[in-house]
Amino acid sequence: MEPAALSLCLKDRARELGFSMLGIAPAEPAPHLAAYLRWIRAGMHGTMAYLARPDRVVRREDLNVILPGARSLVIAALDYYTLRLPDEIVADPSRGRISNYAWGADYHDVMLPRLEALVGFLAAEAGRPVAARAYVDTGAILERSHAARAGLGFIGKNTMLIHPRRGSFFFLGEIITDLELTCDDPALVPMPGCGTCTRCLTACPTGAFPEPYVLDARLCISYLTIEHKGFIPRRLRPLMGNWVYGCDVCQDICPWQRFARSTWEEAFQPFDYDRAAPPLSALLTLDEEAFAQRFGGTPIYRIRRPRLVRNACIAAGNSGLPELADCLIPLLEDESPLVRGHAGWALGRLGVGRGQLAARLAVETDATVRGEIAAALEMLSAA
Image 1: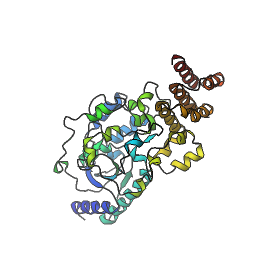
Image 2: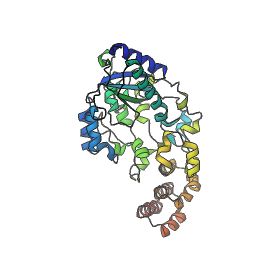
Image 3: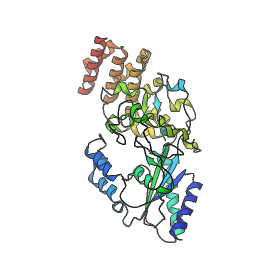
Image 4: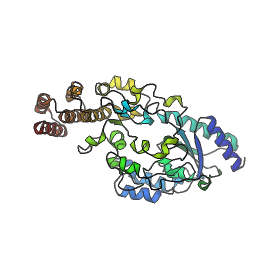
């Protein structure tokens, strides 16, 4: 089959599998590669050291390192936007907020089998063995940059890939193949860009955008709640509000989001508000078994219980609800230093638990946790 005909058939098959969009780009260096390398050199990737590993940088520079003989890069998109939470739910300080993409099933589990099905389709239609590698958020590929090259959107000032007719609430997955396919011409789809709009830059709670099109991950709430494994800097905690997993502020505020399309994918439906904005009391009292039962099969499961409870402690501290002390005080005895330290901070910020903090300080052996509890006691003394 000729490349043009095969490419059209591939897009038809992608729609049958439920993908929202599919574009094809040449297996060449990503258009934004130089900007990415500058970002790495500036250290804005934070503790995500894997992004700066030489072997991964080489892969991003040349897709042939991943797949020798690579000729085409297929990029598939899948909408995940589900519903807009009522204002009273969003503003409820007793609830934590979870990024829209994590309300349902783990997107890796949903998308990868479909990408592999596309690989099988290509092999069957090509009539020869096909070399291909499929990735969902795991390959050393600058997927947003390649997706823009494939006509699936433009890179916004918030660094998200934005499509003018569907916003930015969609996942991306890729197939690198040695097949020659017909690449999409991005010039055929008008991409108006951001213009003079700076809503995302000014709305970011932590000021994570030092300039348009540049995100300092070290300040990003999504990075802090998901990728960062250690203690979150104290100066940033009050700015995180009630986000316990991810953050959607720079997407929600974007004018292009008015065109976001609700997904038909049942796996991404949250079923109820407690999945999207769970009560903090429920998160603070999770043990390992309850965490696995509640979040198994979702993106949240990969950060494990200590990090989620750490995030919930920060949200509790920011809630202004001293009654949450009943959930926080037992966490001073938690086996995870990460949890104990952030629980101590939350109690200090809420202005409660002086006696329990002092008692814990007397027996605490972890130096970082001791520092957190001492700082909490100072907050209480200054109140």
